[in-house]
Image (tube, rainbow, N blue to C red; front, side, top):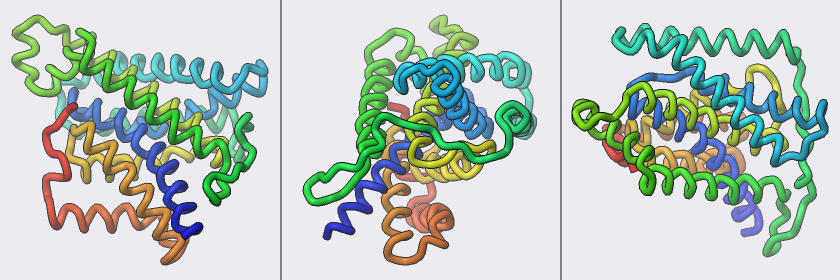
Length: 287
């Protein structure tokens, strides 16, 4: 049972990271219908920004995380203005190519600036503690708790503020939102900013557990797309629940089956769920 609860906790921490990345992805897709493959690159650059700020300027972990969130939010908005906004009336394939172009550029940029080698991000929460008989690092608990707090803040923003309501309105009915005077450009920039914030937060929380390297976002974005398909395209609750499902299933699969198949489990889960419910778990739900 100790092993069971240990892997459950590991699955919750991994699922927290997946859910944050998938949330940003599903908001952009659900509201703007843009398949933003660059979300994985935002995740990667967010980790490097936090690492650089902590090592060079010796800024504390949480402040470095906040700086990274602001930096990646700005990067995401810049990408929206330069790449996605001019392509807003183009075919989906052109938007996809634009997103892949951003991804390739940022990966190459990271290799030039930070190098291709793996790097370790230090954390003030690296110590292991005993929790009800389970040995776990403080960082994994921080990942879970911080993710829940971020999700609550996002929910309150979308449901209790005028700007958040405008974002939800755009997702539910674009034409109706235009008719009541909602500014599409403002909503687009804000949506991309939120996706950047979520990517940077996820990267900063996960990097002390994993390593930082230019290709760290590739597998994460693939799993994020699996998550939003499983949860229902454009569904925020679906992205959250599917992210945790994937994290837990991966953790148990690596323990009780084989760690060699850990990254394949996401696609097996995708096939199983879509075979039962082709529209995903929560189709069409925004909040």
